[in-house]
Image (cartoon, rainbow, N blue to C red; front, side, top):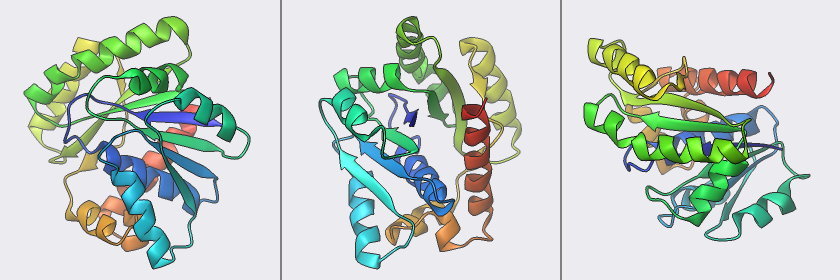
Length: 214
């Protein structure tokens, strides 16, 4: 089982939205997926309940985990292809465990100087975790951005030069489809497969798979 963690100790960067869209996208491709929702806000868990009520066919499991994350991972390891961890916007023991256990860590960052500066704590946490697990692959993901803007390009350069982590080629724009789809417990591919948001999520899923297959 491959473990993907979405982490950024700044709130409002779209972690839960990306977790849900990526997990459902993998499920649509017939992968077995579990989400560990470690954020007390419970957005992923609540969305999974909506999916069950709507009878969506792509199956994902969501477990609300606020302690003993490592034990939960061990118990699920043989039953799933991917575990995707949604973390809260603050540091605690669960976030530390999620970081150390990860194969891939995605750090969503908005195209704002303040957001870029705020990632420092998350970067430091990952660098400490890599002392225990040097195989962790950390990547920034530009999230909720204005696509093809000069600001987004310039801040991406600053982000990479400041923190030395690679940036995913896929970018997630600030699109209404991400909000509307989750009202119905769907990801953007289910909601409108031809929408630009659906293309972004399919691209992200493909890129993530290529990283984990290396």
